Image (cartoon, one colour):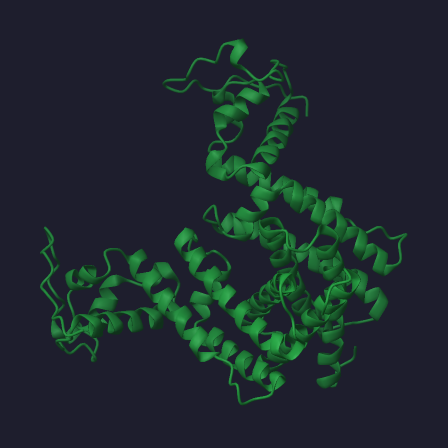
Length: 231
Length: 231
């Protein structure tokens, strides 16, 4: 935790740092320990990727905003892609944390509160959310797996909250998971549409998603009844 | 239409054609006109991409199956990517054609019939469908635009079929489009889950999607009522 930054092996030709006058006002050279520096860089990355297409985010600009050399940034993240993946991992964890259900609320209010915060997140991370949902940055396996892990975490969370209300067990849990994945697909599509077209308001998107979550659980109950399985 | 194939400009080093014994039994050298050849190659491409990951489909194998030289294939499609895009375009048109609503059926049966054929298609094109939905082949703008155009064609079609039943006009149409995009997202997610996990049966997925389509239209009506707009 208190390990100090080491100077990176110098690259063959490192550009000179821009004169202080050209640096962002925040770029004071502060000496951080390794963990702090990593966290600072990731926070900057999340911020930039949230608002600008991947290709428009430059490593120079990030290093500059952090007040470090490009060489030192590459010491933490060997490529821009690795930096993006680290930012996406952290940002996904942040999304899950921010939408954590409040156990003191009744189920419906819990869903409303979670979805309100989900749409806040979508709004704040418009560029990166669109890019992810459209595969626009040429999704590789690593990126696809972060997205999938996040989706599954949501499915598990909804399942846990729904199960206490419904009372399910065994094989039926997998069947509910399957139906809930449909709702996640619907949530992503409506969120993307909201970002790109703004035909429905924020509140309408949230209200529609709450209603549709209930519809999905209801459809699951109907499938169970039709298959002679327990609801 | 009756334009004859011309010999492609010979590449610097063209591999010799494999001996007849190594070629697929279907690879009889038949002389097609340009349109026929293009259609034959695209049909072969759709078939291969449907069942194998993009990286596992080789241009050699396609040329071989068509009974033509690799050079002639590159005459029609300059790159493997261009060949894939042409196959995807044709395959998407085929999906829309196969799921065309039958106007002699009542609305619910029309939806059931369309979704049955949609899931047939998903089943027959498992590899390409998964890859598309997962951005697994590194979706570029061109691929994303084909997927989007197909989605919008579905939205328009459902809209037209729903509107005759509901009686909508003006701005409300855009609002229904938005909600229907949610259902498309749900359809894609459930289809992908069906391909990858097979927890719900084909018929269950279809039935769930029919019920969820009704739920989406119902949620739209609720949003309209809450906004004081016409249903």
